[in-house]
Length: 288
Ligand code: ATR
Image (cartoon, rainbow, N blue to C red; front, top):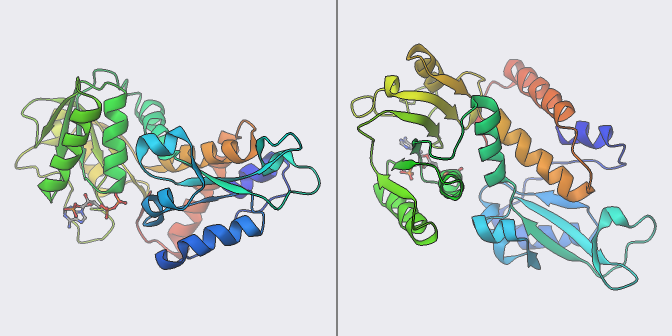
């Protein structure tokens, strides 16, 4: 996805994957900075750790409490920090790392585009209270959804997110537990569905999918998860996590390049990569 986007923008860059132990994250960020990388993406468990390892936090990283994108910057002749894309020739040795978060906006955009869900005033049941669930819950509250129901195997974690929402968005109606009524949207932010033996993330004794209008699964491989199949059978609109993966990446490319990202090119490459991987390596995967 990123290399297709980079090529379409005619940038002489390469996007590479590195497996970094959390104990070496600081060294890896500093190493990338010393080698004058354009930027980095980070995934679990690095997103929280990186908050303390960058030189500057963009408001997006402060607001959502996690860093999934880093941009390296250097001072221009006037001493103003600029992204490295702005330097045609020599990049000064003095550099800084700025942390951003593109996950929260991506989930809201994917819900709107892929399910046509208007978030404002929508009632939402959110399953899962890990890192992804937390960002999704806070973003939904910031979008002023109607009623927000949080469910998690470890209820205490859902309570903690509900408390954080009550503090930051005092007008948001938020409850821990299954709703008794219909909801506009169910979101699966748990990892249930990644293993073949997994139960559905929603407990049908407490909540029938017939009471939901739309279901979003953060899992994107396989393209149709067991939850999506069950939701379709119950008459819901469904979408998988590809849109979230796409939009967080497209926004990162915009942050690094300062250019409008070629979203459809990136979507095509992403879908092709997922399809190809289904034959060679059909391991269920979720955006995290
Ligand atoms: P991430 O940061 O990517 O969201 P995570 O922190 O590992 O990942 O969160 C995984 C989510 O899936 C959590 O909500 C987790 O529930 P717990 O908070 O109780 O651990 C949920 N989850 C994982 N395995 C589960 C299982 N077997 N049954 C129910 N929920 C499960």
